[in-house]
Each structure stands twice: as C-alpha cells, then as structure tokens.
Image 1 (cartoon, helix red, strand yellow):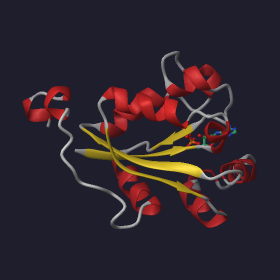
Image 2 (spheres, rainbow, N blue to C red):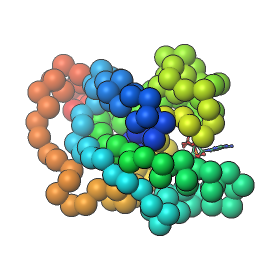
Image 3 (tube, helix red, strand yellow):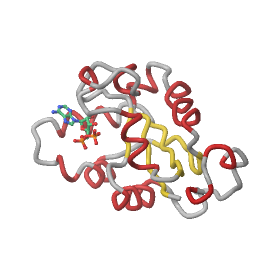
Image 4 (cartoon, protein in one colour):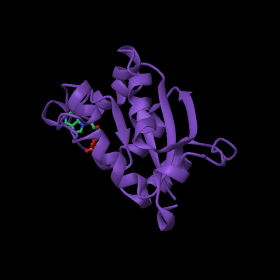
Length: 153
Ligand code: ADP
C-alpha cells in the first residue's frame, strides 16, 4: 500500500472545508493513517516548497501557509498518490475539472485548499517531514475487503 501526504490549507480551514475535503478521500476508499493540526513555519515551508523558492510568488505562499494552522493527513491506498492527485485536480483551481476538490471548492492559484504529494518518492519524504514516529497508525480497515480485489490489497 502506498502513502500520500495531504495538507488542508489555511483557506480551507477558514472556509470550514476540512470535513468536506476529508470526506472526499474517505468516500474514495482511502485509509486515514495520520491526522493532526499544525502551525507551519518558515523553515518547514522552505523545505516543502524548495522547488518554488526562487519564484516571485514564494513569499506570498509562505505567509499564506502560516496564516492559520493547517491540517496534515497521511492517507494509504493502492496507488494512492496518483489517485489523490486526480481527486485534488490541477494547481490553478479555477481551471480544475468539476468533480475535483479544487475544481469544486476553489477559484485561486495560491488558495487552492489542499496540497497532495506528486510522486511516491516525494510522498515518503513529505510524510517524514510532517509526521514524527508514532504519529502514523497501523490498523485493519475492514472495508478494504470491499474496496479492493484480491491482488490489489
Ligand atoms: P501543486 O500544489 O499542485 O503540487 P506546485 O507544487 O507547483 O503545485 O505549487 C505549490 C503551491 O504553490 C500551489 O498549490 C499553490 O498554492 C502555489 N502556487 C503555485 N504556482 C503558483 C502561482 N503561479 N501563483 C500563485 N501561487 C502558486
């Protein structure tokens, strides 16, 4: 099973969309294995958005992401990273497909309600970045029996 990191961003916290966004991943059949509220700081955002640090909009993202605490979640599922990127939709929310989280719930490039890991390798790094040992849980999710077929479990 693959893991992916989700950050429910400050715009979603302010707009009361935490439950709605979480519900979409639950409905899909993904398994929540880590969840906490966290106040991000400059250091973790420089690491997390290292690929954007030279962009003119980086200071804006950094202050936006620190404007309220965020919800960080770790989800598990078969090929979960790809599946969750599809559910989330493209970065520019006003152009995201209807039916996706960003397509249905957001209008902005920056304020696009959620972060989702973009590759399996990055997901592993990001889960370690945001969760300490002991904060990711192992348990038997009984509905996997019905969510997956034999070799996908
Ligand atoms: P994604 O979050 O879809 O993986 P990126 O890693 O490229 O996209 O960007 C990280 C975050 O930075 C985006 O989710 C968005 O909040 C912000 N961002 C990216 N590009 C822009 C932009 N051109 N203008 C404003 N904010 C941006």
